[in-house]
Structure formats: C-alpha cells, structure tokens
Length: 220
Image (cartoon, rainbow, N blue to C red; front, side, top):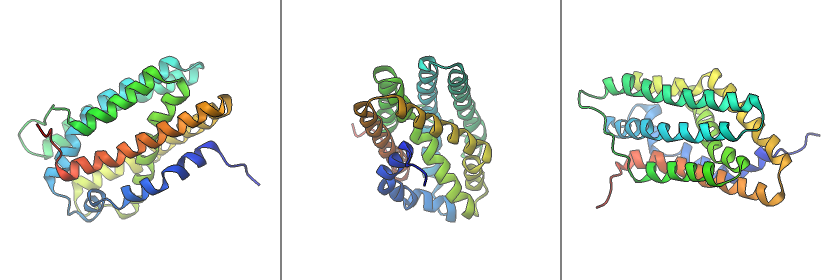
C-alpha cells in the first residue's frame, strides 16, 4: 500500500478552492466560447504582468536551491515565464485589438505577486517552493480539464492547448516531486507553513480569474 505523499495533503487542502475554479464563469466561458473578449483581454494584460514577478520568484527559488539540478530547473522555468509573457503580448495582444495592452498592475495581481515575492524573500526555501507551486499545478490540472473540452473559439482553444501540453505537465510533475522531497527534510512546523503558503497562493489563483471576469480596477 502506497504512503500518502505531502503533496496529496496539499491538494486535499485546496479541493474546495479547485472546485470553485473549475466552476468559475471565466473558465466556463473559455470552453463554450461565450467569454467576452474584454474579460480575456483583462486576463492577458494582467497575466503578462504577473509572469514578470512570478519569474522573479522562480529565480529566487533557484538562487536558494542547494542542489545544482534545481538551480538550473528553476532558472529555466523563470526564463520560460518571461518568454511566455513576451509571446502572450505578441500573440494574443495582436488578436485583441490595435490598442496597446495596459501596463497597469491591478489589485489582485499586485497582491498575488507581492505574496509570492514575500514568500521567496522572507520564507524558507521550502516555503518559497510551496508558494510558487499552485501556479504550476492548478494550471496543469485546469489545462487537462479544459483540453478535453477545448473551445469553439480558436483564440481560447489556443490558450487552452498551452497548459494542457505534455511538456508543461512534465515540468509540473518535477516541481510536485521536489515539494515532496523538501517536506521530508523539514520540521512539522515548517511543513505547516508550506501548507499555508500553498493554500493562500491557491486562493489567489481563483481571485486572479475572478478579477478578469469582473473587470477589476483600482477603486480610487
């Protein structure tokens, strides 16, 4: 009988959050093609800005990693996040109108990236990895779910294909395995902090899609 992994516990913690993500009207609109272009544009704008700081958080994980393999992997992922940001601006941006995409970092994006960078700078290495894991793992799971449905809208179908791709899934499996390894090396108190980091970042994932759906702006 297989032993329960630490990441099994992490996922169990966020099952209700993940269920809410899958049922969110933003994701339903992606798959049935009904999502307003304004909501998708909001998402693309903020995601491109989010990825810049997410790349910084990944680079910090790499800088703190004790083994060369993880240093290389996180730095490669950081470079990949920057490349994704540039590709998103060049690709999706062209299809969303002639007006340049906004460079204003809105509340949820600011809060989420600030949380990740605080974890990467101020938490332990294990906490930092737990904090960045939801962006990998939830997108991989969402990609798998949405890929089975795709979308009648070619633009949305192309976005779905990125996160359902097997090469991305393989990257996620590597970070999940690393998280399990780290959990074996730290104290119970630190494992609890890892769980808290993971859960909070998962809540921000829901908030990020919701922000695009409601057209979030600074209130004042």
